[in-house]
Amino acid sequence: MASALHYQTIAGLSAQLAAGRLSSVELTRAVLARTEAVEGRIRAFNSRDEADALKQAADSDARRAAGRSRGPLEGIPVGLKDVIAVTDQPLTASSKMLANFISPYDATVTAKLKQAGAVLWGRLNLDEFAMGSSTENSAFGPTRNPWDLTRVPGGSSGGSAAALAAGTALATLGSDTGGSIRQPAALCGVVGLKPSYGLVSRYGLIAFASSLDQIGPFTRTVEDAAIMLGAIAGHDPLDSTSYRTDVPDYRTALAGKRGPWRIGIPKEYFGEGLDPEVGAAVEKAIAFYRSQNCEIKEVSLPHTQYCLDTYYIIATAEASSNLARFDGIRYGHRAADVTDVEDLYSRSRAEGFGAEVKRRIILGTYVLSSGYYDAYYLRAQKVRTLIRQDFLNAYQEVDALLTPTSPVPAFKLGEKSDPLAMYLCDIYTIGVNLAGLPAVSVPCGFTTGGLPIGLQLIGQPFRETELLAIARDYEQGHDWHTRVPSL
Ligand code: GLN
Image (cartoon, rainbow, N blue to C red; front, side, top):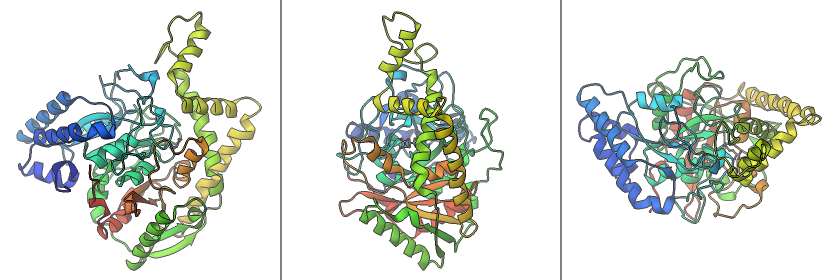
């Protein structure tokens, strides 16, 4: 099955397209047919427009025929998490609040993918407003894991991970605030890259926690992640946190980077709560790097134990402020038959938001309220600095850090009903967002029950090329990334 068009890589397909052995219309038709066949069981898409995709594909073929191909993404169907704006397309954040919203403009990443010639295909499901780790918080129902339909795909970008794993898109974009690209990538057996904070513009991404949010790609291989990153990265005057840095051709730069690397193993990331099969797979990955003459060094990130608390103060504070705009007047669902403006606000918000979103807004409002601001929010900001400093200290000695991505493989739908149990899914991913670092999850094995396991590599700020090269070296020594679920 792995040779079917819908399971090939961007790199491979773009070579076939360039050689005239395949057209974008043929490729897009193959992806549409695959979607028709399996989407009823996966439910990765919130909306999709077949006719529009085929029109984009025909336009791409026409450009290519005229000698105006725009590069490796020309004609490739790419899906977007349903928090990334596309002009005249629905944009729901998987919330009732935005169930009927149509975006009036393109996100910067959307505009960049269009400039790169990609065929934008479908709006992918997520936990409502990207709050969650299983995609079960979607107002439109959960997405299922293609490797086991009784299990979650992870979250919040579960639709983006599942669509790629099911072959219903050839690459997708997600957003990662505390792990929402890497964790679902791990649970669905694909590559997921969270770029350095500031490398990819957030303009047109529905904000959850603005100081933590980053957009990044899901792909089948590390090389494909480099191709996608190259298309979406770069300074953007429309995002005031966008960083002024040169964007290399990551794919070419990657090919020129070889180890051996110095790899740090943070001892705090191998403790209680780590599933033994996940731990064993990650140990094997460490042994692999050692066999490649890499220097493996135990390091310590002493403030790790504060990451979860710090995250849930900062992320909820920012969310409560960002979500204030959904008031039934400027945006979103508006309650019917209200008595006055106060009633309009409160009923629109009560009806429009789901339980987890309300929990976050209440927590965030509390930590920002007068009398608690210093004790919670301000203190969390200080601890955040210490957490970042831990990572920067470790990078005095090593090029990258290696950890499990998720402490557990894909769990059953409905299994984690306690919010705290769900929050613990992100213990290995959250520190990266607090510190603003790039990190990637790559497939590193399977449980005896056949569920994918992910390895996380964490890089230095804006050193994506080295990070991807380290991940590529692992990938080239293994064939996990070539396995596909039987659907
Ligand atoms: N699971 C984490 C949360 O619920 C992270 C989500 C994300 O990265 N968007 O906040």
